[in-house]
Image 1 (tube, helix red, strand yellow):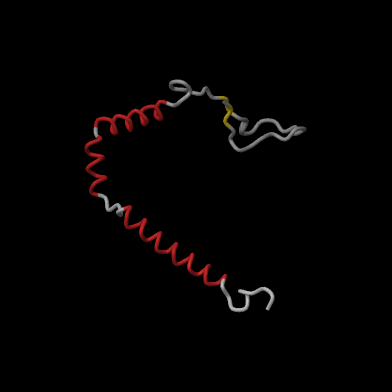
Image 2: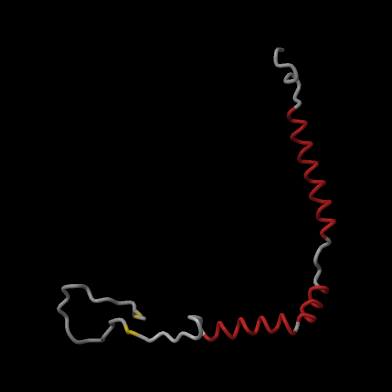
Length: 101
């Protein structure tokens, strides 16, 4: 892999000497199957935490203030009926019941 230092030499430039700002080639250190070792260890750690510590994760989830889904469903149904009522009333405006008048 070639790592840039933020500079490039313009073609036709005849300057010599000075600080070398050309890109540097470095060898990529791949871990396993193209993933870095830190990524592999992080995934293994999360999997181990979920597998071996599921009781703790479950206990934390029980303590979290997660709202009851049935009350949310009732609220959505209530607001939906209000919205449907607004549109059904606006469709029955006076003078629009009989198109010939």
